[in-house]
Each structure stands twice: as structure tokens, then as C-alpha cells.
Amino acid sequence: MMAPSIWPVVSAISLGVGGVFGSLYERSKQHAANNLTLNPGKSNSGWTPFTQAAAAKQQYPSQPPSPNRSGEIMKFGFPDYGQIQMHDNYVISYDRRMRNAKWVFECLTRDEVKYNDAIDRTNCQFEVDQSVHPFFRSTNEDYRGSGYDRGHLAAAGNHRRSDGVMQQTFLLSNVSPQVGDGFNRGIWNNLEKYVRGLTKVYTRVYVCTGPLYLPHWESNRRQYVKYEVIGTNSVAVPTHFFKVVLGETKNQSYDLRAFVVPNKATSDDTPLKNFLVPIDVIERAAGILLFERLPKSLLRSVNAPL
Amino acid sequence: MMAPSIWPVVSAISLGVGGVFGSLYERSKQHAANNLTLNPGKSNSGWTPFTQAAAAKQQYPSQPPSPNRSGEIMKFGFPDYGQIQMHDNYVISYDRRMRNAKWVFECLTRDEVKYNDAIDRTNCQFEVDQSVHPFFRSTNEDYRGSGYDRGHLAAAGNHRRSDGVMQQTFLLSNVSPQVGDGFNRGIWNNLEKYVRGLTKVYTRVYVCTGPLYLPHWESNRRQYVKYEVIGTNSVAVPTHFFKVVLGETKNQSYDLRAFVVPNKATSDDTPLKNFLVPIDVIERAAGILLFERLPKSLLRSVNAPL
Image (tube, rainbow over all chains, first blue to last red; front, side, top):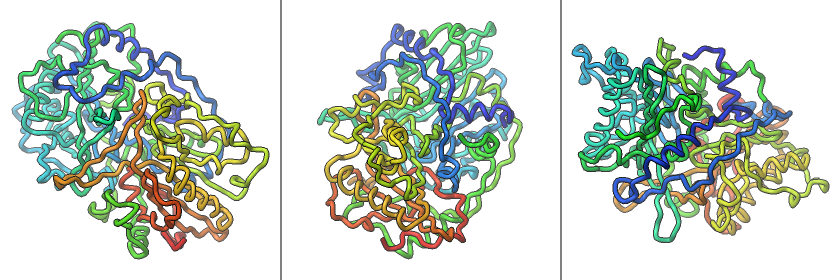
């Protein structure tokens, strides 16, 4: 649990009445634009990044609270709040409408990911997240016969401190429908291994992972989002997944890398750098802001060569 | 603004570490099942309600907080929190990924909706919601040439107390892309008028309105969600809209009615009762829970004849 004292801050931000939106994104966007572009021809073909949107130049003004009738209006409760849960070793925001996580946050160290004979993945089992209201849960039955793997977002292999810590990654709230051959058991697994490998280079590796539902153009010159839903709980099958990695050096400087990988079979030997994207592509598509509190002066590189 | 003292409660619920989920839904579901069924043949054809999901029988157990690394993991900030905003006369939860509201809550009274010569709708203008981060805003340009109306969720006509109160409903965060002829200017307008008319019957009318993105079956026996996105900000075009109405009598008993209307041209004289649905269809599809704090003993009817 977070300290109770920060909740008023959290709540104030969640009300949109304040909050500072750093210019890290502007900077990272510039870096990214300089260093690489999306690879439109191959693995990312057919989807539209959100970068065409007007650049965010102006500062986010605070809105003074005004007298209102919210106590009366909301007398019988709020339909939802953010669905953030703290586990021992990862933090998750759950999207009740999609029956998928919105994002999952980890902080890896060499110790956390170190191979440990005593921890046996085969002892772990996928289990329903009982803390999610029954209307919004995904279940093992939803996946059965769907053709999709139960793909971890916070990877099991990142959490080898104890059986309990690893088991928590098997909660179905941390799981999304993923194409098995060529994705979950292929390129996505390669990316997870790459990220774990970064713990040999960095003191800490912050990782944010989540699903995306990206639009594509159709022949009528209009854009659509289309994704499958599986099972009686209508679990959304993401079109893509993102992973954003922030490496912390012992001198407290930071390297950022942002990946988007399509949820489809992709040749196993595709270089991971082909999936690097400007971080704001992910932010816009997922509706999130990443590493807002990282002072931009500490950011050493964005999407630097792997 | 809500009283600061309730935030720890809000936050505790949002963390999923507790919270009581009332059995109102069970009750309302029974009522609804007794009183009506979806009209699969006509206006609702082609979409799949979420009611097949296993009924929620068990109570939602609380999860004890455990020691965790969340302070370390989240050192550089949370990617998002709930995006709830209080306006003078309505409350809104914004979905940054969809660039649409998730839900909008109003409490109508005869005074609030009374026609007022001094309030001129033509003085109001659609305006960007500056309190939404620029990455996630919708703009008037997004709608231009799209073929869709800028459709209010909290209806302008419900907020005639002052020009300022009405103007707040013209924030684009309260607006969704709606089919104009036959929907926004037709059946949806009829529904809004019906709801305003209820203020002559009830002391207060609580109204929750929002977009839906409903799945349909395709010939491969799989289900998909498909919706258009418009403009450079990729504003989602909902496939349907819901409106849930709770009428409060002067004796503090309550009548609930829940509507889902497809975002398409529909004959103007379609009876509104054709759009009544069990409330849990909306709850499951939107990822929300409605009127949780309403004691079920006070609920007099669900989807009673109009």
C-alpha cells in the first residue's frame, strides 16, 4: 500500500484540477524523431500511429474548483474509479471494460530476475483475480479453445524472488490473449529476455507493459479499430503490445526505450530495434503518460541503438 | 469538489482492497429478466449483450495489503489515474484512450431543466476541454468533415440554470461523435426529452450517460468489436450509447430504467421501450457499476412500462 498521505495528491490529479505535465515527452519525441522512425513497411504495417495529432505545446492549465452539485449528483456512488492494484512486485491498472490490464509496472534488478533453482514456474497456475468484480474478470474458460495463449504482461521470469511473488504474476488480470507461436513464444519472449538482460547493465530497470488497440485505414479512407473478443466475459484481444523500458545507471542517468509489437506471428529473428517507436505513440494510443516525474535533465538517451 | 475526507475511501476502493458490491445488480437483473428482454430483431440487431457471462454469485473478498515495492516501482509517477471531473452541474469520467467520456452523471430537477428565456443555446460554443492533457483531447477539427455530429452526453437542454452551466456541457469532453440524422437529431433527442419529462413525475432524476463499443459476431463464428476513429486525435465513434435513469419519488422510492441505443439512424417513431435493456448489460459493456449505494429495498421498479 502507498502511504495514505499521498492520496490527496493522487485524487487531486485524478480530478484534473491540477498536476504538472512534464516536458519529458516533448524531449523524448524529439529524440525519437531524430533517432528512428516507425518501420511502416513490415512488422508495424497497417496501423496508424497517433503522432499526427497536433503537438502539445501549451501547458496544462489548472482549473479552479467551483461550487457544484457533485455531492447531490453522485449520491449513490461513482460508477468507477481507477483500478490500480499493488502487488508485492508489480503494480497494475486494470481496464474493466477490456478485461485486460491497462498497464503493468515493474522495477527489475539483477537480484529480482536472478535464476533461482528453488522457484519452479510449473508450480504456478493461472488464477482468476478475485479482487476484480465478477462482471469484469477474465477466466481460464474464456481462453479455452480461443486459440490464444494466456500471455503475461509482468513476465513470470522477472519475479523469481519467491514462489509467492511469481504466482502473483499468474493472476489473470496480468494476462492478455496473445498469439502463441511466433509471438508469445517468439518475438515477445525475446523482448522479455532482452529486458531482463538489461539488469546486467543498469542498477534498476523500470518496465511498463500493456496492450494496445490500434486503428488501421480501410479502403473507404476511414480509420477503424477492430479487435476480437473471446469467451463469455468478452475479453479483448489486443492488436499490439507495448513495453517501455527505463534503465537507471549507478550515476542516476537514464536511458529510455519504447517498443510496440503486433500481436501476430513475426519472424523470430526480427531485430528488436525494428519495434522501437517514439514514446508518445504509446502514450497517445494507450491514454497514459509515462515517467512524468523523471527530471528530463537526467534522461541520457531515448531509443538509443540496442 | 468532494470533501477531502472521502478520498481515503475512494482510494481504498480504487485499489481494489475492499469495497462492498451491493446486490442491487442481482435484483435489478432479476427484475429486468422478468420484465423484458432485449429486442434482438430490430434496433439492437447484430450486437451481443454481455449477459452470457457467468452470474456473479460470490461476494467480492477483500485482499489484505501486503508488503510490496510499489514506492520503488512507481518512483517516476503513475501512467494514469481515474479521470473524474466535477462541473457545476454534472460529473464526468473521461476515457483518455477513446477521447470520449466513459460516463457522465447528472441529477435533474424540474428547476434545472425549466425552460428559461434568458438562456440561449445559440450563445454556447463547443470548446476544447483544456483540463484534458493535449495528447488526449478531442477538438472541433476532429469532427470537421467526419460526417458525425458533436453529440452531447449531458444534454445542453438539461442545464438551463445559467449560461455558464449550459456552456459547461459544450466542453468537448462531454461530446461524442454521433450520427446526426435519425440519431442525435432523432431518437436520441427523443430519449433526452423523455428523461427531462420525468422531472415532472419525480423529485429528482439521476441520469448516467455514456458510449458503448459493442461486439458483433462474424461469419467465422468469432466476435469482434469494430468502431471508426476520426480526426488527427483518433476520437472513437461509439457503436451505441447508454442512458440509465433513476427516478426518486418524494417518498424516497426509486424507479430505474436502462436504455441502449445504436449510434445509427433509427426511425423517429420507434418506441423508446424497444431500447430498454437489463442494467447489467450496460455495466458489463461499459466496465462500470451503477447506483451501488442505492439500498435495494428502496428500488420500486426496474424497466417498468414507460
